[in-house]
Length: 166
Image (cartoon, rainbow, N blue to C red; front, side, top):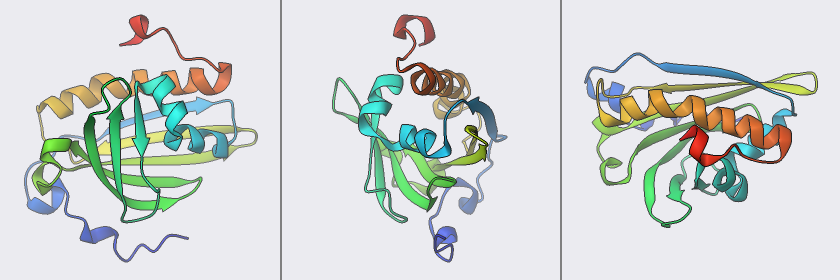
């Protein structure tokens, strides 16, 4: 079980008193084990294949994580692992790389995985977004495509055609 005593010490947008947009919540069901879905969220090659970015971290609570463009090698988004309990739950802070040191720009992404026999229910909640910001708009337009592509990748072994889902 993760040590939850330090979770509240990472300052994100809500801790600054700034207004937050409503949470973005998306649930998808994937015909695979929770362990396989978990791996799809953190594995470098998997995330490159379905997201066009890879997620890089040592995957320990308190550690930094980076969302790196597959082609450019540029860190586009970064944050910190707030909570991690493989393969059930993971919480990250999330911001554009050049804003990641500003608590008012840090949002939170929570992944919750529930095993349903041989399948998995994955719920992603992106909270504490700045209302109307480019991040808020991008999150609401992007997560459903990314998670659908994750599902396709895990279930069929191949990602959707990039031209069709971007």
